[in-house]
Picture (cartoon, helix red, strand yellow):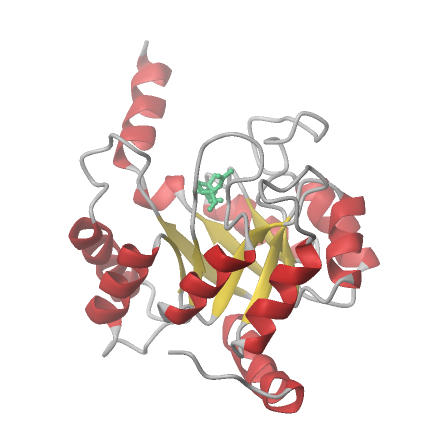
Length: 240
Ligand SMILES: CC(=O)N[C@H](C=O)[C@@H](O)[C@H](O)[C@H](O)COP(=O)(O)O
């Protein structure tokens, strides 16, 4: 898919898409490097299972091959909106770090492209605005993954269509906590006109509910649903 869309078309489609995910659950279907589930066929099966249990859920998927596999597996199940990203590297800015990564994710069929929008230097030295423009030129929406209120405000100012608290606790200067950063959700929701998604360390349905009550447009849950290794480790630790 390589269509180029006008701002007007994009904004009509964007409103519909955002309404689809309003007040709902987005499940992040990812497996870390080295995990036996890290293969497109496994991720696609996890995504199909998630959609069978929560038909209204959106999906967050990492990597071009996984996005293509998930699209094929769940194409006749809704199809659910896909937030795509490409993790390249493991240090600093590595979630969809350049415009080229973002375009590849868009062209794989993700309706929304998630991008690191933190204040840290980007690996190619190019500004975030370049990625925002590239995603919009593809007719897709951009989700800004941030770690602080200031980053969320800056990303919205650059034209991000939505902001997510994904990176709170993962930059050296952001709040660290074992659970979700509901304070950041509330602060962003109070400051921004664009939808705010709550993401990161949501372990229970009650925490997800609390995020909506704090003003989130939607809640992204990953490991608590799709990572057996992390879930098993938590249980094992509790019994230790
Ligand atoms: C920090 C980072 O790289 N977050 C990633 C972003 O795509 C994913 O590994 C997370 O699974 C996702 O954000 C959902 O969070 P949690 O798995 O905590 O529910």
